[in-house]
Image (cartoon, rainbow, N blue to C red; front, side):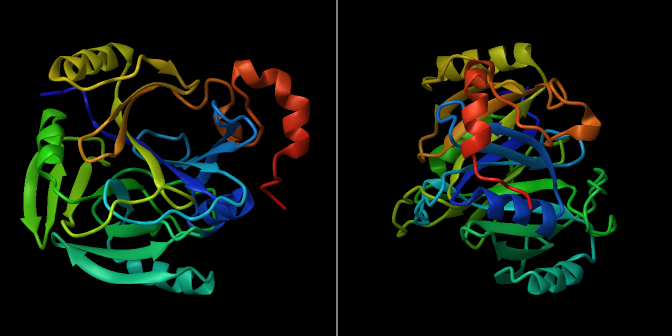
Length: 309
C-alpha cells in the first residue's frame, strides 16, 4: 500500500474560452488565480490555475482553454464531478449567488450524510459544493463571504462501467472503502489532506466519454516530495503499471499513468510550490512561461486571449 499519498493535488480540465473560464472561477466561485502560464506541449494555449491563497495541494483546479474547442461527451472512463468543500449551512447562499450569476443548477442531494449542491461550469463540466466541517482556510480576497467560501476540494467522482479494478488500485493508493450506496462507492484516505475522498460511480450501461471542452483531462494525487514520488513510481511499476518518467512542471514534479478504467492519473509533489517564481502577494498576475518557451514571450503576449477586462 502506498502510504505516501495524501489525497488530491489538483484536477486539470479543458475549456473553450479563457476569458469565461477565468471569470467563472475567480468572480463566481471566488477562487484565486494562482498561476497564469501556458501548456507545456501547446504554448499557444494557456494553463490557468485556481485555488486558495497559496495554491495549497488539494485546492487547485487547472484548465487548458483551447479556443473554440468542441464540448466533450460525458460518459464512463472519466472524472464526472469535481466537488468542493464549503462550511455547513452554506448551500442557501450559493444557490442565490449562482442564480444571480446565471449559473446552471443541477440540484441538491444528500450523499453519504452530506448535503451537496451540483452545478455546471461554462462548458457544462459538473461541479458540486459539499457542506462539511473543514478547518482549511479559504481565499478571502474575492467577493465571497469567508463563512461561505470554498475551502478546497472535497472529492472527485469517477464514472466507470465496472469499478472493480479501480477499487483495487485505490486501495493500493492508501484509500479505504467507507460506504457503498445507490451504485456509488466512497473511498477515502484516513488522516488525508482534506481533499482525500474519491467516489466511484458504477454505470454499467453508459457509453464511454469523449473528451473535449468541459472534460477532465487528468486527476492528480499529492505526495510530499520527490523522494516519496520515487517510491510511488517504483511501486506502480512493480505492480505492472506503465508510468512516465518524472517530469518537471515548474511548480511540482509529476508522473502519469493510465488506470484500468481509462482515467489518466498523475502523482504530483507538494514541492516546490507556486511561489517559486512569483511572490505570494502577486500569484497569478504575470504571464509565467516555462524556460523552453520564454523565447516565445513577445508573440504569446500579443496572441494569447486577454482574460481580464
